[in-house]
Length: 119
Image (cartoon, rainbow, N blue to C red):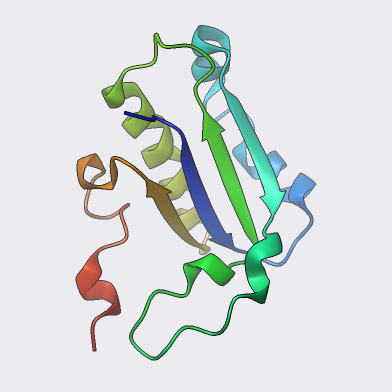
């Protein structure tokens, strides 16, 4: 299973400001697995607007790319990192939606729940 994850963030600020928000959040991840956590401008924002009741996070301004650098990272560890990032962003009042192969393993307050977008 691919343990990488894109976390879409609805925040209209420079990437560097989001990076500052995340500093110190996951230092062990960086040291233990040579992981990369990159903040990227979402160039796919030209997607058509979502229909009412459908997810629109693909049009959020940025995404945070989490990539474990080694195979030593376990699913539980990846879930902990993604959970920490999403919760930190949400606690700061920002919409954040993870998109990964293991969304079902994420806590319910972190993952994009289908009912959230149903009419």
